[in-house]
Image (cartoon, rainbow, N blue to C red; front, side, top):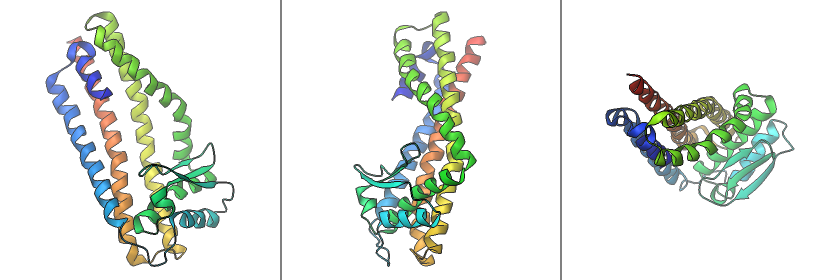
Amino acid sequence: MLHDVLAVYMGGGGSIMGYLVFVVPTILLAMWAQSKVSSTYNKYVRIPSRGQITGAEAAAAVMRNAGISNVKIVKVRGHLTDHYDPIGRKLALSEENYHGTSLAALGVAAHEAGHAVQHKVGYAALKARMALVPITNIASSILPIVMIGSFFIIGGAFSYTLLKLGILCYVVLTGFQLITLPVEYDASARAKKELVALGILGKDEMVGVDKTLNAAALTYVAAFVSSLSYLLYLLSMVAGNRD
């Protein structure tokens, strides 16, 4: 919603054609990616693993094999709210994945454990993403101010300043989304390897894990494409103003 309002009001409304070219396709991509991950997860969360190991147990096994003993596995509320907290040294799993023994639950849990392994070995892309978090948070907090300002000021020097500020924010956000891609794909690769190597899942069971994690990765691709598209749209508005 923030992106849509910003695009419409910034710089006198921007270019309708530019909005259709840069923004609308990304909205459709994001909707498709979210639908894909939901349908895939819902399919494989119904298929239990033969070993009946829970997600929490799988995550613990992956980290233990990597020599990690200082990360606490905790249960959190919500649907697919799983994440790894490198600052608090916590691996948070949603209840359905914490207790679940499904192929989807094990895939997600092992993926988050993959982030913990990345942290331990000093994976460069993860370190870069962690370094970008403060400035990314600042950029995210500035965008609402830019949006509100664009409601009241259309045209003129100050509106152009808001446009440039919006571009700067999207440069930061796009960079963050770009560095997130290798972090997420690498965590999934580590998860898939460890699930088989540790005997948690058989190779024939990995189809469900592959599809679940590959679908989840699409959401990160969509986020990057979306951020890049809004950046290009705002840059096109700058070019239009100069013309």
